[in-house]
Length: 388
Image 1 (spheres, rainbow, N blue to C red):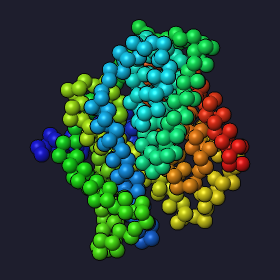
Image 2 (image 1 turned 180 degrees about the horizontal axis):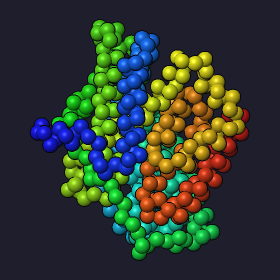
Image 3 (image 1 turned 30 degrees about the vertical axis):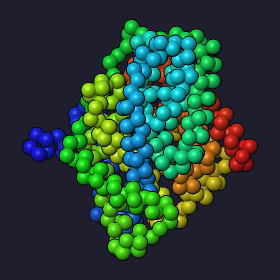
Image 4 (image 1 turned 45 degrees about the horizontal axis):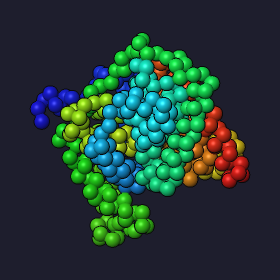
């Protein structure tokens, strides 16, 4: 690796906003402070939590992404042409694209709206059905729940899109002809850095399967500490790759086949490391709170009662996938109820809200507020008829 490559790997791209760069530094500094300055019990819990996040979540997310992005590349479609060709079916098509794990489908629909190929109803449909990167986490850990929410999202997104289009018309707040360019750094090439991370996934997936069957990995292999070593190393490597990578899923949208031919692994690494960081944050928030205080977050959310679904919906209105991955992690740990997760899944727009705000700020704000309506109905319907 030459000096230029090393410099590129060791610095965060200037294409990132100042806020995003500061956020990455803050996360890394906070993790380093816990690992170095914490007491013995804190440090041990820190490394055990990182290992648990990697083995119980990261490896399955990576496996899911590899399959999904591989199939996506093999059966690549021109989404813009598809939406324009089937103009009368745009709303269900947009809902289906939004329900796909990740934010790529939603970003495609939003960008097509900016040039007049899709209507406002399609934007509402795709933002309603989008769950973003949190979908990968949910499918990896609870595939039945994840697929059920995806199916429900398509139906709810389609209905919402048609209702909104009936109210406002297809061209409501159209921005065609006055679109703004959405800036996104070119897809990041991990190069040789990708292969050690991918190599760690081989034992990682095996350990993840063993853990899923409640096996004692160290005892089964006769290697004390092997689970902690592999898991912690994989987690640290994932955080490092996230730190140096300026890209998100948006960087891979609407690229040519030539651009994407060798990008399946890079895209898998990009999204998996992003999800991993937020899962680590969620796990650490829970574990460190339990260690440092007498609070029990499960009891805290259980006592929230009818407010829990509302919290899930309100968090979903925040742009970006990070808060949504955090919410899903809390659900998978049993800290928040399914009603809150359902509300979050419907109301959240993932990273798609960022380009939406760039090309049509007023339309996107109204559209994302519309997503809160079915989210509240579903969340509280489930709460009162199932959980209450």
